[in-house]
Structures are given as C-alpha cells and as structure tokens.
Image 1 (tube, rainbow, N blue to C red):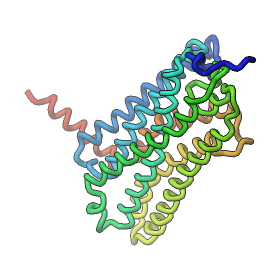
Image 2: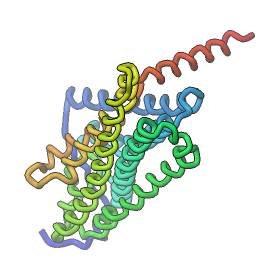
Image 3: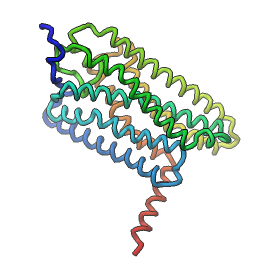
Image 4: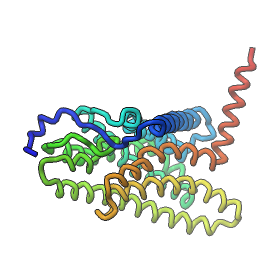
Length: 314
C-alpha cells in the first residue's frame, strides 16, 4: 500500500466487536443496562456523601471523587462501544478519536493517583489516628484530589501527542474505542520507540503507585494486628477491604494491557481485558463500596427516613 500523508486520514473506523443477530441485540441491551446502572450507582454515592453528615469524612470524600471520575471514565468509551455493538462499526473523526484517547488516558492515570491517595488516607486513619484529622483537613483533601487530576491530565499528554503526530495509512481500528496500540498499528512508520516510551511511562506510574499502596497496606496490616479487640480489627479490615478489591481489579487489568510483556498481548485479548478496567470496574465500584459498608447502609437509612419525614409534613 502506498504511504499516505496523515492529513489525508480524516476519519477512523472502530471495528472492535462484530456481533450480529440476536446475540448482538442482547449484547447491546446488556451493555446499555450496565452503563445506566453504573451512572446511577456512582451518582447515588456522590449525592449520598453530599447529603448525609455521617459520611463527611476524608474517606468518603475521596470515594465520592472516585465516583465522579468513574462517571466520566465510563462515558468516554461506552457510547462508542454501544454504537459498535449496534452497527458493527463506527465512523469517528480523527479529531474526536485523538480527543477520546487523551481523555480516556487522562482519567485512567488520574484514577491510578487517586487510588494511591485513598490508600494514604486509610494509612493515616489507622496508623496515625491522633493526628489524622489535623493532617487530612478539608483543604488538604481538596488539594490532594486536585493534584491527582492535574497529574493524570498532564501525564496523558505524552501518549496523546505521540499518537496524534503519527502519519496513518490505514483507517480500521481493531478496538471499540481509540486506544494507543490499535492506532499505532495503523501508522505508516515504525512506532516501536513510541510504544516503549509510553510503556515505560505508564509502567513507572503504575509500579510506583502500586508499590506505595502495598507499602501502606503493609503498615496498615501491622497496625491492625496490634489492635486489642477482634471487633476493632474487623472494623479496620472492613474499611480497607473494599479499596483493596478495587485496586486489584483496576491495576491488574491495566497492567496486562499497557505494561505486560509482548507475549501477553493480542488485539482480541486486550479488547476484552480493557472491558475490566474501562467498563466493569466503574460498574462494580458502587456495589463494592455500598454492599460491604455498614456506614453507607446506615446513611441510606437516615436519608430515607429524612425524606419520608419531609413527605409526611403537611
């Protein structure tokens, strides 16, 4: 194929999943239902934390920030996934494609930093309880939350620029959204050094955050085991277990796709693994943080009683 200047490529075609007939319709409806539940679940957590004073703690502030992030994160890719399932392919402009790439990676990297920040919060709460509220003031919480977004959106400039400046000869993206590797496979030039730069960058961010989280939870485990009563230990483990589940799901799946050795990569496998961190994790987060959390259940009861009381007033 003759090389074509990349300015000629005005549109890409997303062909991630080609499921036809009844199975395609069921996949579309199932995905749509999960997407709507994800939006409702994360908005529920944000509203609950905002309206119930019993959840006005740093931990729930960061959980609400995570839910806000997940609303945008899942909405970056699921609309193109739904269109792909419905029509078999989706025509997308190059500008929109690169914008999707940038926003998706920005939110993903922001989540990496935010999950690490949440681990710091749990460490201070359990291992430094006397100094916790002084160290984690509302101003510090807001500063930390803002720093995670700034770091994520700054770091994502690297893959966005590396990808958007390539010359492209092909248009069919073998994915349901515009991601780095599927796009680079369409380039007219060798992209090995660009992929290596991105892999090293994401690998460092993921590894550093993961090491910090493991170190913090090592300290938490040590402190919890020293607690005098079984009830205190159970409560401490309960507040951390939800976060550990979320961290494991997100980091392990993202690491396989973006950092793992080449032998672990294939276009089909990466598409399905991407569903875990881009689609299923935002869906599961509200379930994990509510069904396993007694404080959230109590907050729901209080808010429900308050609403009933308001409705009964003449």
